[in-house]
Length: 211
Figure 1: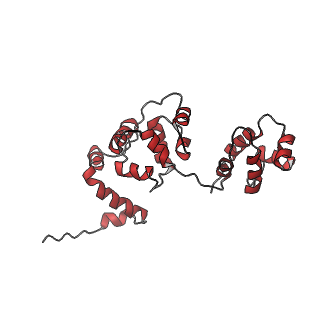
Figure 2 (figure 1 turned 60 degrees about the horizontal axis):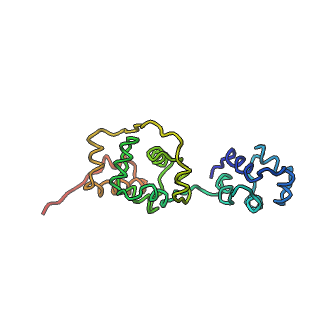
Figure 3 (figure 1 turned 60 degrees about the vertical axis):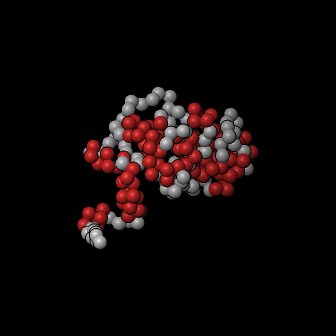
């Protein structure tokens, strides 16, 4: 699990608030010298979970133990499906799929969007970036539980110009967007998840018996 030291230092600074370093360390029950080295980024390894818990229990600005653990690399980020549901609103998965296609040029099938929302699958970081760009949101929005208020806060201040990432031919895009082909997409996706290389799929022979 990779840590994000710059993010951790930023969070620790918020934890400290307007207190002096010595006062902050004293209230946390942590050695001031050790805390100073952590906050200056000269530690090779991040502080252990016990130290982070002590800091979180005495943090200012609402910084949580989970946020510190994520930045320190002890927890993996997890896509929160309810955040996608909040953004989707009353739109159908088909409508959301077409909206994303229009905004960033990427075809995400309604079937896959539904799986993301229900947390049956975890999208990779690239997909989350596409979702964030399409919806004009910070990518971090999808890693936390949100409500209407946080949704407004997490909006990007200036909407980026529409960016097209399409790598499919028009014919393939039309096929992907056809709901009748979703069983085929699911089959290919499951083959990918099972680790079957595309070369093997390309060479596969399919026998069809017609009675």
